[in-house]
Structures are given as C-alpha cells and as structure tokens.
Length: 307
Image (cartoon, rainbow, N blue to C red; front, top):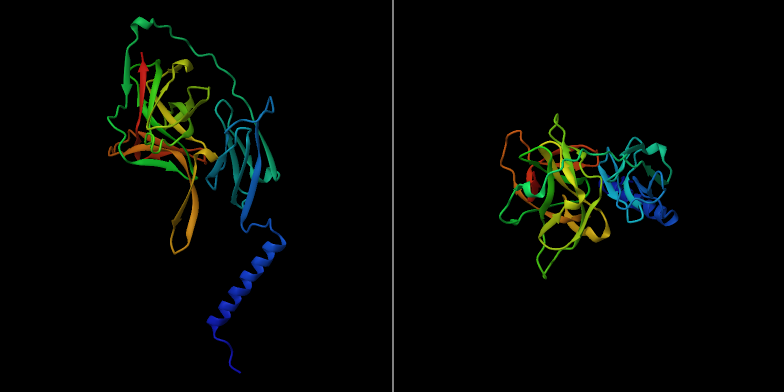
C-alpha cells in the first residue's frame, strides 16, 4: 500500500493541531498563547490614593498604557520575565520594577517629588516684553498620532532671554467645527533641555496641565502656573492618554490577506516635514523605554514668552 503524499500528511497534521488548540481554549478559556495579561493599580506611596492617568509600560517590548481616573490599568503583552515595568506621572518619581518581582495583580507605589522653591524674579508688569516663538500661519493638512509605542512628542524653543516666563501656547490638531470637532483629552508638559544630548530633560512645571478640548487651534493660557524658563532652551510636549475617550479602532493589512485590528489615539497633531538636516533638532519623541529620540517632523506648536 502506497503512503499518503507529504502535502496531505502536512494538511492533516495542521487540522489536528488546530482542533487541539480549540479544545484547549474550550477547556481552559483563560489560556492565551504567548500572551500575559497584566492588571493593577498605581497609587501615591504616601496617601495610597490612585493616581489618575499615570503611565505604565514595559521597557524592552516598548508597549504600555495609561491608568484610568482611579489609577487602575490593564493591558496584554508578550510573555517575558526578563522585561522591566516603567511607571511615571507628573509630580512623582519614575519607578522601574522587574517583571519577575510582581504578582498577577500589581500595586505600583510612586513617591511624590519633593517641592523645590524656585528663585522668583520680580518684574513690573509695565516693563514686560512679549514674543511668540514658532509661529505658523495655518495648520496644514498633515497629522501625526500614536498607536502603541510613542508616549509623548516635544517641540524645542529658544527664548530671547534666560528666566523668561511662559505665558501661553497654541497647539494645532485635527478638528472640524460642528462637522467633526474631535473632542480629546491630553496633557501638556514643559521641559528644560539636557545640554549634553539636546533632548528634553527635567519638568519645569510640577502641576498637571490637562486639557479636555475640541476644535483645531487650541490656545492654553499658562499664567497661573508661573513657569520660568531658567535657560533660553525649553520644550513644549504633548502627552497622549490611552483612555476610551481617545481611542479609535482601526483595521489594516500588514502583509498577506489577514486584517489586523489596532488602536490609535487622539489628538491628531498637525505636523510639517522638517527639512532642516543640521544638528539643531526641532522635535523629539518619547517611547516606553524612557528615552527621547529625534522626531523627523515639526509639530505645529507655538509658545509665547514674556521677559
């Protein structure tokens, strides 16, 4: 009797393997092949209160999410005990914890940063001069958003004088009045510059600047935050929040015929191509490895400073 052709045997083996997987899922519905489900809460170490919209990610896999209003989070990742969690929020020290040191339900505790007294430069209102940096005439028609890896993007500015005061910013994003106002919630961060790497460095505002807005050109008055720019160089950054309000489900083909479902998050930030090839990089992006990297586009953000 002749043996079955190799192609038929291979097909039979594939069918049997699929049947086994289906049976396993029926018998053990919580099994996920190659995936790990993480859930937990991020709290203030001193008060034990949840930290709204705190960020949690895995460094090696470069994926992450935001907590909800109560500090609770959940997300899936590839199975790896060699990775490290990175947890952060405005006004708290960033924490890094090895994956193999946590349980199935995780409670991350973040230490509040110590408040530091800033030198106050008193200037009469009569003597204020004001200038707007990074002006743009229109928002254009090109936009950038994030799906999973990028957490923040920042634009570099250089003030005329040191110890200037940041009074207002304007951010251009996607939005069409009445037809599609594109409501979104996100945070604004203000950073100093690392003089060695030229990348964003320390927060210049410990307060949370959180916006819940619609429309296209978003003006934000920052007077109440009393933000002083100690040196001439500083950054204005947008921090995405991976929350249901901002999420949009998408389908796309990535090779082959199978459609992949993935999420993207608003706001869609207006950008233009950066044609400047010298070392004076305009914009940077932050991923879940905790490292800032050059960003090839220029963000349509302006900043008004007084000096």
